Length: 197
Ligand SMILES: [Zn+2]
Image 1 (tube, protein in one colour):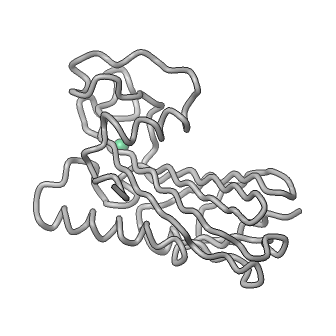
Image 2: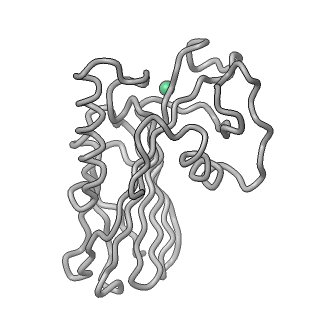
């Protein structure tokens, strides 16, 4: 199994990802009527248009992780029904896996993508969530990319192409940890993130 299948990962594959993103403490399973998958990790309500990007560089290893509402990537969050829906999801997934097209690094650093994963989890928000209509289905997508960099000391910037690739992106909260330090930035369009001070 290389890549988890879209929309079938509520109980298993997405769980680990969301647990690690949200909190180390396991929270109780949601009530049975919220989702058929017992043990599905609840996490905070997402905001359509906003995504979170984490960048971690350690020596020659570079990992990027994107957490995004499905809306940003597919334009909808329901279970794909029609062939057109399914094609939209498949196309978005293919674009997501091509990390080299979504992120541009300093050429001198010699970074090559070695792996990419995309998981999508459906969820029904808590009834008291004000930001979403009650009972509406939402989906969260987590994508992660692994790169190896031949000359990591030359890695100064990461330039995003998420906004131009996916029209549903309006805001990206980026944070990074590298050999040179850690910081964060908020992007509202494709831009260069300066990893080095
Ligand atoms: Zn949503």
